[in-house]
Image (cartoon, rainbow, N blue to C red; front, side, top):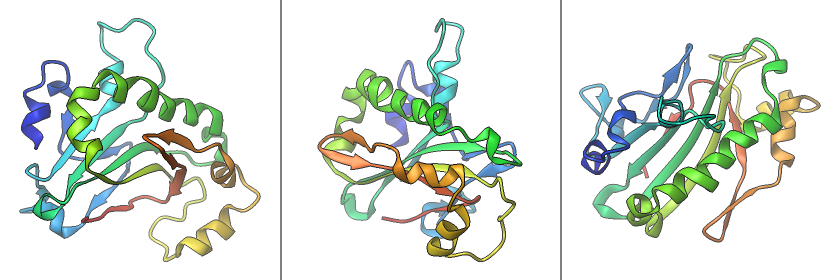
Length: 188
């Protein structure tokens, strides 16, 4: 699957092997690894902001950091993750409107611009997750379930992400989910 993007004249330069930036990232389930590295036969990682921040693009739009595409076993479709990474020590660096604009660029420009390249994936899409990965409260490496995290986020700017208007894409609605580093990209 990675060949589709490695051989692409515009996208080959944004294919990556990890999802990390400034000590924030995601991890991958063991079934998606091959010798402790992401198995590029079934996983493609695209560094989206690198596409928009090139010399050929004047006044680039704000964009998320990564798109991860996971091909499910036995060709049973795809899971897609759209990921923004934020390494901040307080919530002033997490502005919902600003971050929403980054996700908007994916839906209004990137997936439209490369619709032909993504058509096979979106025609067989199982799920799409939108993740903001950040830890302004220094909760990393603590054992919190999703309910406990929601309680910790209550009354903070992070709670606001649950109230943003969902993105509509191919007749489905998607919300931005706040995740503590390093969430796991799961097997299909």
